[in-house]
Image (tube, rainbow, N blue to C red; front, side, top):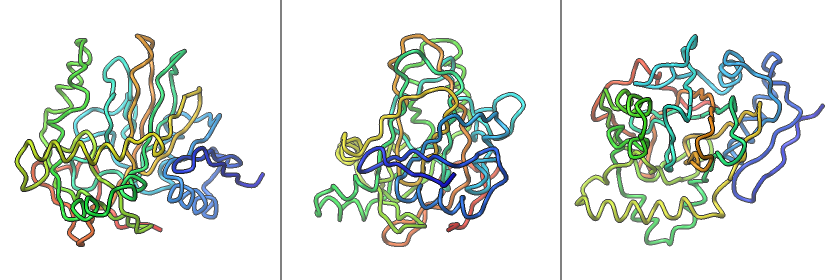
Amino acid sequence: MPVSIRKLTSRIGAVVEGVDLTASPDPAVITTLRQALNEHKAIVFDQVNLDNAGQERVAAWFGELTTAHPNVPAADGTTNVLAVDSETSKANEWHTDVTFVVNPPQVTTLRSVVVPPHGGETLIANAAAAYRDLPEPLRALADSLRVVHTNQYDYARPSAATAARQEYDRVFVSTPYEAEHPVVRVHPLTGERGLFTGGFARRITGLPSGDSADLLRVLQSYVTRPENILRWTWSPNQLLVFDNRITQHYGVDNYDDHPRRLNRVTVAGEVPVGVDGRPSVQLVGDASHYTAVLEAVA
């Protein structure tokens, strides 16, 4: 069966069919998937029938894996799987994964394990489309800025209402990390520019805190415009793969108290580079136990 790629919206998202994720990796198929990810930013596979080891294997098609998280332990019996579980956390804020380290993951994979009877969608936003939507003066300003991301500004903590969630958040921030990134990141494979902000972005370098917060809100409003967003409703046994370098995502807390679990595996990434060619720098913390620093892979 030939590989079929069907767009989900004009700006982001596609469904991929005709790929056997249980088979040995085929270089031609992997190239097709990488090209689809470059173009659509997020791709979805139905009825994948993968376990944790299978998800790790498929994620490794895109590159070397990170461990589960710099601070949070991996799911039982694994090294690379993070349980995104409603019992311990609800990431109901826009963010890009692990941007508080100098080289955040390039790719995130999410596999549906427990799906609630209603709600629980994952929203994914195209940060490149958001950048293109900026008026030219605002775009030029964003090109020149740097922003500090930190895990001490945790998107989960405000909603931590149970002991399990409070413990998760304590572990999440137990070792502090800060990294300074360009506000506008140049994608290493496509050359696209995208807004690199989100929930871990704490302050714009060189600006007073109030001005920084106001400007981040303005920039973020372009990321979360409805036309830039894929709203994915989960079914069992699905795999969602998105380019963490040029998207943001949001797990919607609209499923009451029903259980919801997605297993996450991420692929190690490159050090971001801004429009001026300056790379990101780690300010606080050493995440070498979490991720290698990779060169761009075509």
